[in-house]
Structures are given as structure tokens and as C-alpha cells.
Image (cartoon, rainbow, N blue to C red):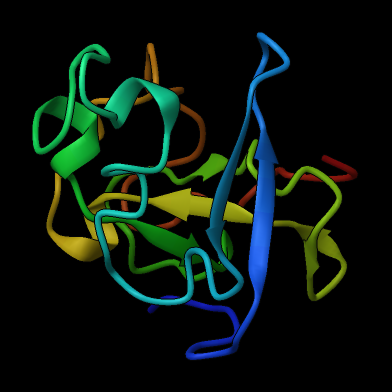
Amino acid sequence: PCIGFDNIKGETIVKFEDKVQASYPADLGARCEAWDDDRNPSCKEGGEPGIGKGFCAQTWCYVDACNCDIPTMPKVASYVPDARFQGKPVFYSYTTCGSKDMWADEVPAIGSPKCRCIGFDNI
């Protein structure tokens, strides 16, 4: 299941590698939504892949990485690098939302299917 604070007012400023910033809702990642569409600079008009295309159109949310019922390993969330859930970094998942991860370059193969939380310490 998704984790986070749903339906709160405000904004979350996301800083990207090229020092570009984008404004997202404060409840970023709290539920399955195409969070990047028309927010991420690559997901705006003229961006690549652009509005409604590729990873921009895929729904995702933040998840508990130790929820051992996720068949595809979640990845550490770069949008909120200092955030913690139960003392661990926040992870995101497209699989939880029934979408395909087109954002990550590769999917790490750590742990075993449906139990990816084994072996993580101080990440």
C-alpha cells in the first residue's frame, strides 16, 4: 500500500540534478497518481517524453520497502532524499499502482520476489 500524508495543502519543491526545481503538491506520493505529468520539467510541453507520455503518464506512490508483498523491488525516492518512514529512507513504486517503471534506468535485483526487504541496513 501507499504511504504518506494524503490531501494536505501546500507544496513540495523537488530539486533535479540539473539544479532545476519543480513544484509538486505537499501530499506527493501519498496515493497512486501520475505525479510527474505536467510537473517534472521533462513532462511539460516541449519536454521529453512530454505531457501524458512515457514515465510522465505512469502512476506511482511512496511505499514501505519492507512490505513484502511487492513483486518488483521499490527504489529509493530521490524527490524527498531526507524523508524517512519508520526510520528508513522513503521508497517509491510504480508496481504498487499497476504501472510500469519507465523512470529508473535499471531495476536492482536484490532479495527475492515478494520479499525485497531482506538485507537492507542503513540505506
